[in-house]
Image (cartoon, rainbow, N blue to C red; front, side, top):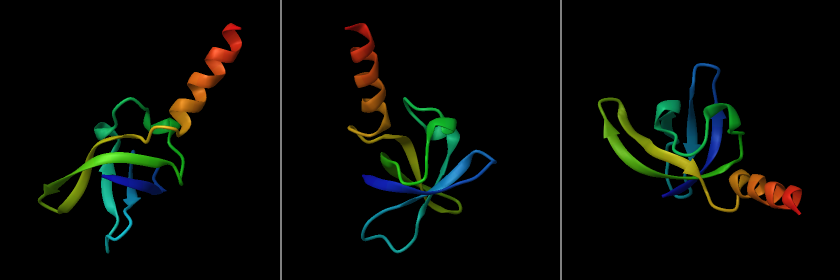
Length: 82
């Protein structure tokens, strides 16, 4: 699934808005793949899987969508090598 980071907290968790979904999905920093919690910003596009928990659905295996910040960093590295 895809969504957008809506909220980030100082406690290491946040919420993702998903188009067509009524409620935002909770995610914990431990569920991030290929990106650190400190590198996320509100508005970043992410991909994830939806899982059920005792408190309701949440996002797991969260990573930046291709073409977002991760891609920008790669472009900068390539430019520096030239």
